[in-house]
Amino acid sequence: MIHIYVDADACPVKDEVYRVAERYGLPVTLVANSYMRIPGSDRVKLVVVDKGLDEADDWIVEQAGPDDIVITGDIPLAARCLDEGALVLGHKGRPFTKENVGDSLATRQLLKQLRDQDVMMGGPPPFAKKDRSLFLQQLDQMVNAIRRGD
Image (tube, rainbow, N blue to C red):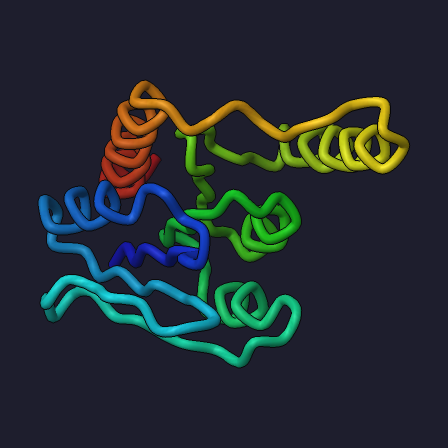
């Protein structure tokens, strides 16, 4: 059965995950470093891990496998989950794949270096309504692809 794992601490699309999971009757596990409110559903569970570096990431990697979907904006976590056979979707609806995660890691490192050298200021553009819509569409497509056996 498909299971959705959410790197939940800074996830802006939790409500969208709940909607898709409810539509297909899928279990969702949110993993965070602190307590947060979750819907009163038997399918939605919150796991609170210790506040150490990468504790939530490590927990997700240990659980996720083939036919699971991981929701995260953390590129190193995405790469680790792909290695476990899980599908990974970014907050803005961009699927991470074995083919694109290396480029994403390199871009992340380059942008960090530019910010550290004060060559570039600021971060990514703000989360927009179209990002939310694309995320919903991509998550729905991922669920259906797994269900079809693609």
